[in-house]
Length: 188
Length: 335
Image 1 (cartoon, each protein chain N blue to C red):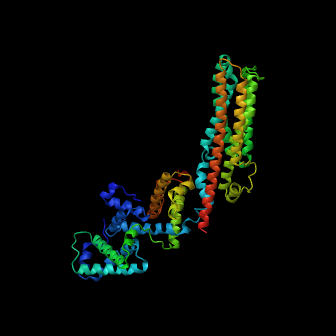
Image 2 (tube, rainbow over the protein chains, first blue to last red):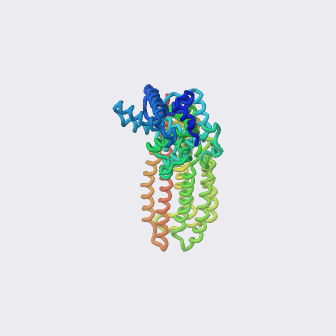
Image 3 (cartoon, chains in turn red, brown):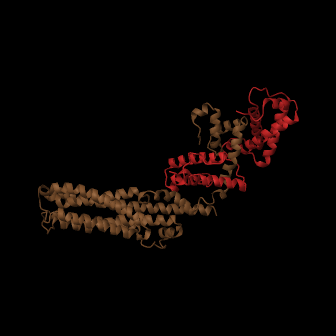
């Protein structure tokens, strides 16, 4: 497992090395923004929360609080987690953090390029699996509803949906259809 | 809903984390699993890169309907629902074809027993081997007729079926003409026909209407409507099935299932009355009981086959209606 930064960078940052600090900032800021977003922190507050976390990380690093007993990322994660709890406590809605754990990914509009990539990935899926994936994830239809629409049992719809997700992910990650995907007319 | 097994929850490995990225992106992990993955993302560059690649795509899939613009059209939805089925034999209605052919064949077989059962002592052997031949012959012929119908263009489907059934019945009657006795085989207080004449009456009055009204009509209507829907004539099919003001495809006879059900109920009353009248007139004999049994079994086979046809017809039309309603809802929701 390759960590975001090595111990040498962490040691340099704790000694005040600007380049190391910038490297850690670059490695963890996107992760922290993602974490804040996943915890339900609104985008307008997210950047402030992330900034607070990074300030705290570097302050504690300089104070020698990180003892190299765990991975540096785990340590940063725990600081972030506490900051987010603190954020919600200030908002008086700590429960939101736990709800946030069930939250879905941000619903920001995708770029035209991203939309084309996703459309192409859906095209590469077996037609029925693509339809089931879209009905489930885009239209918010339940397995029962999809089953009624495509004339399949709920359990079969679930199987096809899981298969579609894995194939979709494989196409997105590799840029090509996985070898086990059969042609559209043999999707059953 | 967790997609990670309990075993993996107890012992997360690098591989578990990697496999969890996809369900994480799709929101399929429970709170503890999500937290574990999120912590791991702070420790592992590989998984973080995977997440970055996938997260945007999943987010786009969730929120951007442009990604599926060509996917949730009525035509594609219908293709997905009906198209794969239509690729199979009998336009995907294999189960109905088998059930209908078996029912029709069984009805024909029992029809032989109603003619020969009373004189089983004389014609029992003939009844037995003829039953086997008729069962296989009618079953196979019925499947061939339905198969031929399914393979024809919609406008020729019903005609193909009627011609096919007429040929089957003609061949059957021509074969039985030389095999069935040309003498009365039932002793009754009313005038009885010869066995062959009785079988001809069975075929013409009972079996042909059964095949045409309760098998061919539902089959051709369902296949034709499904075909129209696949061809994009969604609005017309919706009008036909919902408001009943659409244009019936050329060559297709569209009868409402309720009408067929009502006809079946009326025929049931007539059939029971007719059977009782005949049984009252039959003189006692060593195999009169066998004759009575055959008569009731024939009625059962006939009505069961017709009921299957009506039930199947109603279910399939409901399926089409539901599909059209849901596709309309979806497309209304997508503007």
